[in-house]
Image (tube, rainbow, N blue to C red; front, side, top):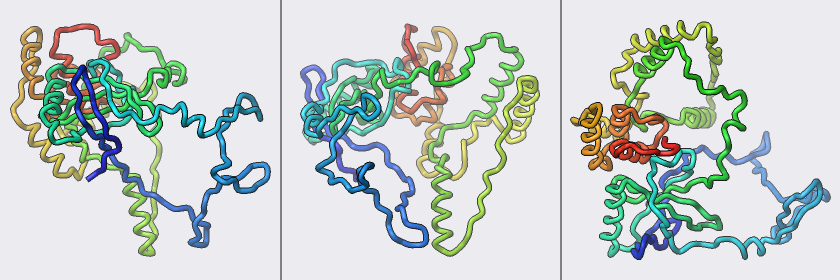
Length: 356
């Protein structure tokens, strides 16, 4: 069981709720030590004065902001400590926003937000349900580990989740960052566009996260185990695919469709092999009867009725409903974002800004 990384109080209006913050993810990256080749001697990194070559004690190290080459403004650690935000004791929700209006690029990391006091269970459950029914998330700024975070407090699967977010000025302009970015076209050949959409439909898969694995990490572990047993492993990278020329696009699309049909595409197949127990459970839940989307006012009414039980649905089922409603960018969305996008689709149309 993970230990909380932060404890404090979450407030909205005059309501206060003692909460604890827990990490929602963990890394399984294989970690190595640095050794000198031919020995088992560890290689250590030391802080060395680049002019004298002598090691510098930690207490003698200050920070410098370079104004020009060789010209620095020196800042003492104590000076930074004085102006650091310190540790907030409260997550004060300043307002509630619709997550469907927030571009996914803003989201950074997710934490579980649990009750820190058993006596606060009713208040905790009330906020969980209120967020579900209001289709909104609480926006708050709070400090932890010497940093200030913009956050969104959301409700999913009967618990609160806190998502740290990037500040607006941290986002890069894709028009400046992506070279040779083509302008969006509207004059595509109808046959090409229809064939591409058909291919996407043929390659549609049910989302089972347990079907996907970090194959590089698995190869690294296999390499370590083989070398520990005195065996050698031969790895082949394979050839890189060549870029498709515009003149042969239609032919390539048609051959791709033929290949997808030969593999049984478009039958709700799984995305990969070796799914675990949770993947199977999600598949069983996805097989349960569901409402089909209908066009016009009837479809909107049915979608509105469907949002009530979204919190209990698997991501697979959420994705299917999003596909039925034509929710854009659904393939890039997290479970929470799918849930909020479905809620937004069920409400009367309005301007959603940069909805994703």
